Image (cartoon, rainbow, N blue to C red; front, side):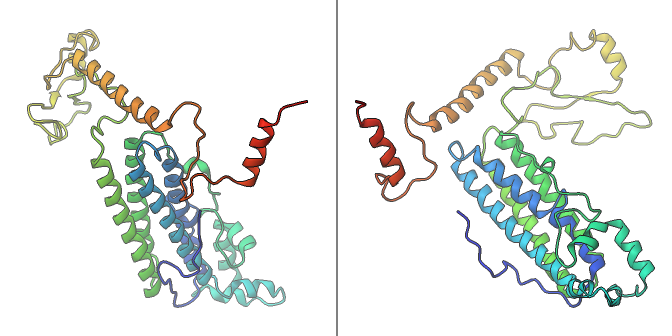
Amino acid sequence: MFHHVKELQFNARVSAPDPRFARLLLEQFGGGNGELKAAIQYFIQAFGFRKTYPDKYDMLMDIATEELAHLEIVGAMITMLLEGINGELKDAADSSAFGLFSGNKNKDKFIQEALVNPHFYLQSSGGPMLTDSQGVPWTGAYINANGDLTVDLRSDLAAESRAKITYENLIQFTDDPYVKESLGFLMTREIAHYKMFAAALETIEPNFPPGVLQGDPRYTHLYFNMSDGGNIRGPWNEGQGSWEPGENWVYVENPQEKVVETNGLLDQPVEGTKRTQEEAVKVTEQLSQIRSHEVTSAMGAEGEVKQWSDYPDKTAESPIVAREKSKLKTPKL
């Protein structure tokens, strides 16, 4: 259930109309890294984890709902930045709407601006539209939901990172201190959400590699030097890096030579780790059983009537259900 509260989560303000910046702000309303994308993504992801990870379900639903609150803030800002243009455009005999573009008081400049995203100015006339700043419609293709919590949380970390950078860039395109204030709040909440997702990911063990199948230990620790012009080394290709103690990267300086020597890597021995292929298979089998048990144990008894929510009076039935049950008990004559 959703309950709308008319007050905004953050008291968004603007100093004056600015249709040009309103168009840029559409990126966070209907863009691929915007608030609607985040809200729908976390909302959809949550469904599959309600029984297996109820704590993560709660978190995803909370953040998804907050993202809807942020969408409302962005929509309110766009509307205020367009304040006046709706009435001006309704007055077909007047051309004062062009004066709303600070520094561009002629029709040529207005038309040039409108051509970038004609739908926004020609159809919206005072409110946000579900497009990005270039007029590209919002699409469900923006959503990442894989049904594996470790994968989804990593997608969410990336989503929050991109949204944070978008707000950071938007701040550079406005001189309005009140708009900057609101954008700063929204940007900061992206940082908070990133920390939430990162903390949630750390509570899942194991959470790497994503999924269930383990990698072939013959290849997991190899780094191929695939470019000429100097061998750059770092924790991504030398030493322990992010591996467990006793495990290290194996730097393959000449990949072509390595491929030839190992019959196209078919004869590549295990290097950099003590894990054997047999152990990797065993871990896969164990993790498969764990993940399967998580799902099956959450399904409940076979034949049991499933219901999404539990209410104080669990024995109460709706009149419709009671009536249908009575029909089943009535013998046919």
